[in-house]
Image (cartoon, rainbow, N blue to C red):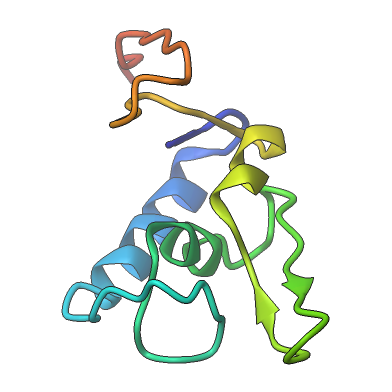
Length: 97
């Protein structure tokens, strides 16, 4: 994922947050608030100012909050790689300076 509209300082802050989760176990439950992370949770938690516009949903069964990958489709990001090949990808070269 690459944020569409973010200054370099904020991008660096998000990257720092991602590195803080380097040793986290992978989670398949999509639940927020535990030490395990899905890819989506990692993106959500790195966005400390909530600039992506992702709003957690609440499970009707358990009442727990969760985020899901489909929410990225409407977020303030460009997908630069998709392992499933289902999302058309346009890759731009990084801008200098």
